[in-house]
Length: 110
Length: 264
Image 1 (tube, chains in turn orange, yellow):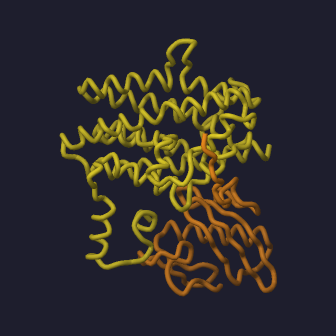
Image 2 (tube, helix red, strand yellow):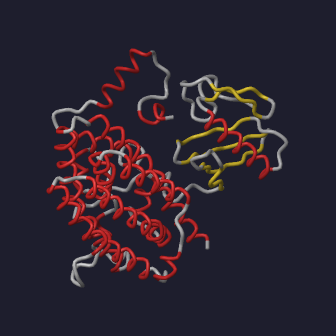
Image 3 (tube, rainbow over the protein chains, first blue to last red):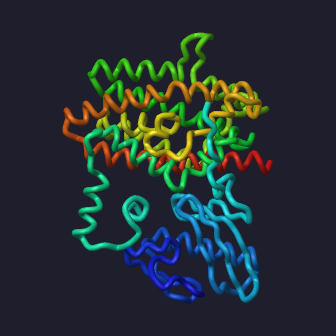
């Protein structure tokens, strides 16, 4: 699996020094929670797509939720994922969370 | 994780980190009140406004029902929190403030001025959800965990820390935050003037919109005064950060509940 050159595989932070094996590959994480979240996400994506492995996951977002695209050859699987406080997948769906990724509307004066 | 979310994602040496932390916790001329507002705006109304705030600009029925079902639990804890503060202080100005707040939020002031809690339940009813069903619905895990955080703060930490932890959250509906750099209001104020939401929803939102400005600012003034007096400003700051982290997850629980209604 292709991972970022630098930083935590999930959040890209360069703090910490936690290493874990995911799908047979040793990866750097900033903390154990990010590792648990990433592994749970991978497990869920593989279960949903039926793919044997994943080439890459592009991730955009933060702790409130992440928009992701999983790639396998020429196949793509887009999803939104959010974790609970213990790193378990709380929500994984193929649509963005309500209003989460829209630009704020300009308020009119009252 | 805390550093990632609040300071920087980039690993720095001890000296640089020390400077970044000092800057983050620096209380300027505006005092503790301004620091609290700055941190709150940054987290909920900054470059990435909270998803619940975005959803509430022009709320769907699901978003509002998520608000109702989770917030009833928040408000019940609110009364406990205010009561703990009262029980643990002998400052008359604080006791009077908390009494007034409990009445406004939970007790109500007669039929003419129903409590915020009552207005919340009416909002739920106006959206087609029976009151008994609202009251019988347990909170989602994120709400339960957040409530535990606030309950622990109010029972175990200094009452001044508890004041800022709780009343600082009322900033969410504070219209003055636009002057402090907030990118938007809690909701688009035009929804109070149009038929976009039910009358009961307007009544609930308007009450918070009008009332919480004074409430949160008065509480912060009191807390700043006593934090100085007891020399616990840094403790108060740390506790406030814990509280807004819990609040962030709690707001996500409102959205999560809202999605459940939308997909039902």
